Image 1 (tube, one colour):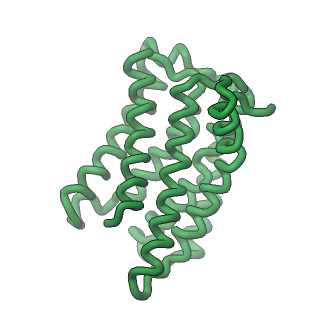
Image 2 (cartoon, rainbow, N blue to C red):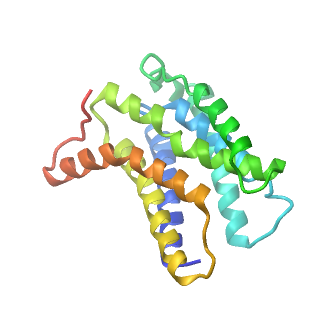
Length: 215
């Protein structure tokens, strides 16, 4: 654990809390892509298959439980809660997210560090997380006007992965033989997908204007 890894974890946790705050307090999921949330649920469910078999630390287990429970609860709220689900824009959130799942699974079967069920599922979760934000970004481009909490949620998600890249660079220079190409490349792709959003997010902050993405 180092300061960059901790900052990444806390930023990721903050993104989850911001989204839960929006859903629980405002009783709205407007501007949030259910497709992306379903993909994140798959990501965490396949990444943390070892939660009851391999104990690393209390911190590690707690974070796994938080991500699993929060992702499933968000999907439940957006699909089943009688008030929250009314604000979901199904007509705009039309990205065919399942088309991302199959290629990522095939890629994980072909390119992995070890061909075992847990390892392939872990690798699959990395590939899928790299592209899971795509439905959300497409939805934001279609709706254009983005409320503050939604903008903060997406920004924190992107910042978390960017901090993880800094963490990997730090560990590469401070730990012997620290080389993990699969998470590095997947994390880089994931961060690059946020580049356009980051640009407009900082422009809106700089000019004190409402965040808008080009159609």
